[in-house]
Length: 429
Image (cartoon, rainbow, N blue to C red):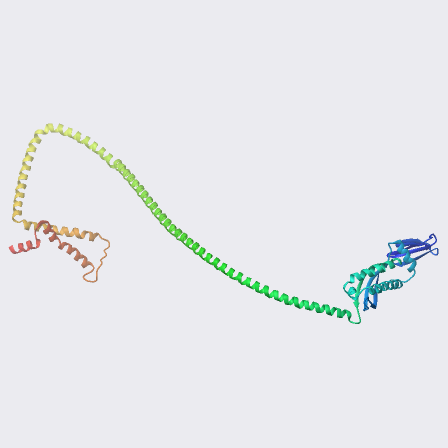
């Protein structure tokens, strides 16, 4: 039954038979195929990895070495001629057979290149060796439709220890150079460490000196700033105290001004009150008194006129009566004058006695006047030292003490000693 046949991208499909003079190569795709009339075959395009071993191959100087190379090869599916050659050679064969053909070809070229090179060249310049094998093998494999994708040396060894001995010399050289380099490095390191330590100590000392200078500058500036701050603080405190004193004085001045204003207001109020009272007194007393005075003057004038009018008729009687009264007054005055003259004469004879009599008559009145404030006092506080009398007896003693000083006062005023005069009077009697 006819139908479509497909192949993947890693395969090439070869169609031959009816309708084709030459086989149709289809790498990765599909094709309509007639069974029994057309034939379809497939060839793998997968990448094949080959381990190419060449044991004990003698190099240019006759040293046998073994080399193992790794190659990746594949059937070229992009080039039609190479694909046609590969199909012609390998179509219908298994992939192992294709690998075997490619590996033998590569192994032969690898041996040939190893024979033309020394062990040192193979060991040290592997890239050159790989490139030579790749170029020589690729030219033969291309004719088979196979391309070499990559080739590299995996391992180089020998059974005689040649590579090991070669490595020992180099290793010894390397170790020698390493020891020399280490010694030089230690020497240089010691020198550099000493120089670095010297520089470090110099830097440290310079830093310590700079720190000390900075500390000194800091201390000096701090002391200067502290002195300035303390000065400003003291000035501020003094200014505050001065301002406080000024403020207090100003407050006192304001208070005194307020008191002066209050006193002035009080005086003004008192003056207003006095003025008001004067006006009130004038309204209540003076005006009525003046009115009463005016009324009384009018009444007195009227009475005067009336008396004058009446007196005109009674003038004679009044004259007679006046003469009688004048005579009586004259007689009375003469009597009183005679009495006063007699009394004066008596006082001339009894001056001290009269004075004593007057003093004695006046003494109770003086005593009453002295004790009057005490009689009107509501409370009396007496202070005593604890000696002498206290209470009412002391109060009486105080009054008597004051009265006892009266003779001294009389003597100072009149020159009369009452005590002596009284004793003299008693002796005469």
